[in-house]
Length: 639
Image 1 (cartoon, rainbow, N blue to C red):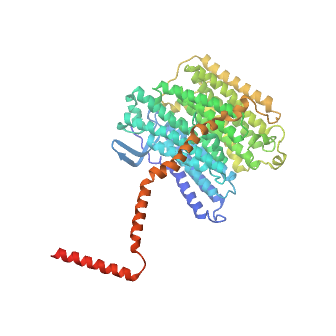
Image 2: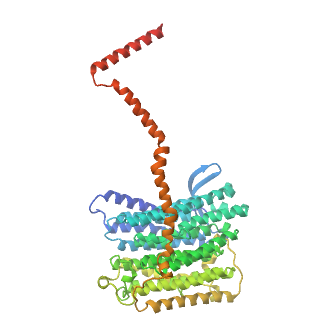
Image 3: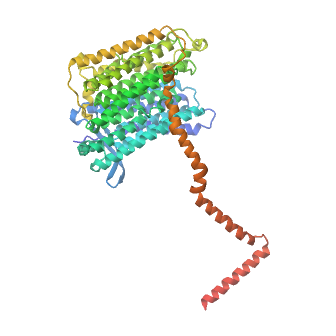
């Protein structure tokens, strides 16, 4: 039975309309020294769309909640987009338990980030343009989540890619910011090629029966193992680009060039979680191709390990959080890779709260210190910024996996699933990464807020952020503290509400193991957290001087020179080939027909220019001769 509603399209529509209105307002006034529109008007218009979208997302959630679990989906086909041969693509929207959960936290956290941005971006001369891009970003993400099939998802997928470029390079006066935006855009295009090829294989195999998720799910049994593996791996290449996994993770740390609210939106609730959502959305294929799942899990856990190592040595507060995002995304992929799709999505959900909180908290610190981002130039801010400190402390406990904070429940569920499904090595690496996460998270907290100020002048001028920035922090802190209880484990008497909610949308297998296995997973996670935070306290809890990195520490501080290696292997040879083409192939081969045409015209012109001497009497003679010839030809034809 189909459940069709015509308001699903309103959810992405309002942020997109906001982007148009704000963009037009900015264009009309960008040449003026001072905009006739107040910042308050821009801020209100920017926040209206996300808030309305959140209200519609709530409506969708409660309507689905009132349905029987096996019938929980709402759909709406706005119009037929195009039809080519057997492929007919409708601009359609689908809301089911998976997309409804994504809609709720994307619109909720997106709204909070918009509100926070009113204070953070105050007095910026491109205030309107920033909010136009932010609305466009959110609207694109909502299309990605709501799309009823892979092609519509790809529209939103490319939309968030474009917006990431626009927002990362927002401060375009700085060349490094533009380079960072270009890097994000180019690396994502590499991943997108895999997504497009995966869609092509999928359509070739089973798409003739319909190319929306519901039809593909019904026909997934027709996939041969080889084609299923190819589709899964190609789609995962796209996920690696968007969600920053090995080897395409290098763009995400550089994305810190954008304003801090952008970092929060990209890293917490929108773009980088798209790859995890996509793998979960195609669980009906991945669950039946165990080899692909194993590849996903291993890439995910190795990414988590690599990013955690890098995070331990960073000095930029936003880059520490950036590498923690890459690491947590690795956890999510490890979860969906071992077929624990609900665990992976639950970590997406909890991560959105505590990572948005930490980024916005870091933004408040940067705002207070006049855009200083080096943690080795901070210290002692605990009493100066108490609201920021306590909220960020809650976010840090959640990120580090401390019970009973949100991150503990979702991270533990992934590690337990890896152990229960027989992926023991992945579980061991995951536990080690949990300890490293606790270490680098509290290294940041202790160096920023504890000890004595390292920059006395900046410290003296620091003060708590305005309420428009601190209120979103407090709301997010509540989520970071309590969101984990929505999936309270059965071992503690819970009912795994999120897992049961997601079950109709996912195809996953739950291995039956004893209670002792779950207790082991929980105990090791807590021990890893305790070891990590105790080492951080011992080294940085009472203040510390910046160390001189040597050996492996220096190697980690320089991020294993991966960017330099990529530059040497890919970028420089590519530029060299481009130079050869530009200097030799283009002028001598590609442009030869243009040059030949030009040469012929030039020679022809030179031959005829002798007849053009500028004397009227000569032109009169030409006319007489011409008329004579015409008369002769005419008389001949009449005879």
